[in-house]
Image 1: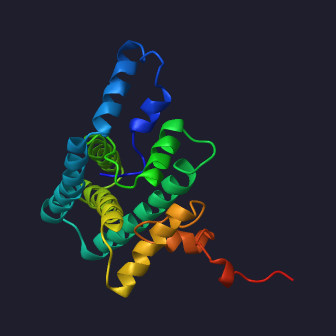
Image 2: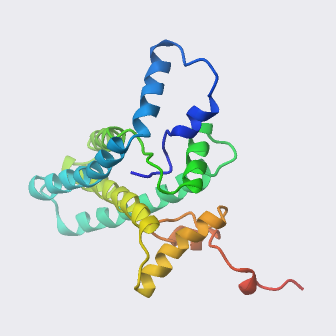
Length: 219
């Protein structure tokens, strides 16, 4: 899926004419870059974005022996946590001045062509979520750990799919048009509107785009 955090053709273009990476680790990175720029990887990623939270949440609900109020609190916390993670990555990693070139170049490539086939290697997000679930299970009952990380993974799926839909569809409903426009504005004013699934953190942290006509006049 089109996530900003990706390995893509841009980094390979920057290395055009240079010798390939040496050693097994360099060859592995080259293979990941080639994989991440394929449509097959993109489509598998879209499916796994849905399957991963589906499995974790199902296991948590069916076998986790959850209590309603703590479970509800963890779901709300997981959604809030993911929305902040989304904002942090978009603002300070993909648009940050002190960040890895692969992230910045990959996101710049998305700004040039929003529909480019580029995504994280399909196995990486599920592997990260499962690893974090296992680590979290050391500090809390496994059912609650699966519920929390499953909710975070659900937030990621919502982000990934909504990000794609925003760029391929024009909405008729006014609320949906405003929601999509918030992200489209970011493509024209990349220093603003970092939230995709929600504008919450842009409002709270002062990065929401304000048109010149609505800005307060200076004395």
